[in-house]
Length: 274
Image (cartoon, rainbow, N blue to C red; front, side, top):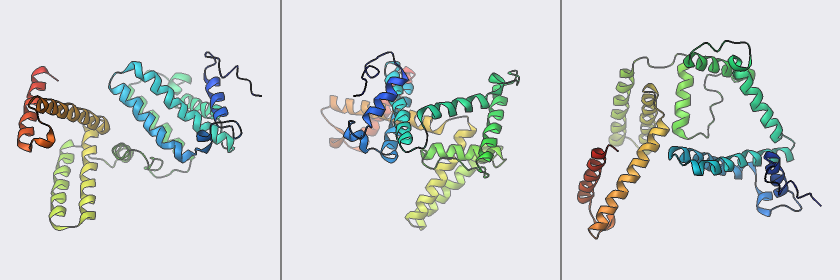
């Protein structure tokens, strides 16, 4: 019979969580749902949990962040347990690997390099070390290793940063703005004269250049869009509230009225500095 002492020890830390996961995955006595899971079925939960961490940070919800970080940690434990069962690696080897990587990437903290340099220079050094690591993995291309399944805006940003490191980049933000105008014109032309595939292609080009503009402005396009999403949600909710005061809903209103209420909500927010 398994010893439940570790399972019920609230102070046992990571060892307790590892044992819980091992027990959940036990083919004879574990949870049927957990036993059936695979790397592919767990991956979407991992992405979801990462976004929930980001959401808690974005809202400053520190009371929620602790729990969300626990949920995200569970994902690493889950993958590691499955990998250990398959003979690939273990949670301990994952921890050892990332610890070794952090030490190797910070010679100015853990080695004999000087800390007397700017954050910008440290970033350059970091990228140099990572490039050497990629070379060791036979990733020779500048864009090798950028995960395909990243959110599209984030992957576009990473691809552009990689290309910029080898000199493939605009030096003047005015050139980026000019490219946006060019791509917008090509999108209009595609809409008027071409088919759905070409329209989608030109729309993608325009989005890609918009990400580039954000990068040149020092902005994170994903964060900027999340902020706008939150703003739209807040303002549309206020429009709905004002319609409710009039005894109506968006379905029983029209665009003219909703536009007028939207402008009023926007003006009210600006007057309050929000």
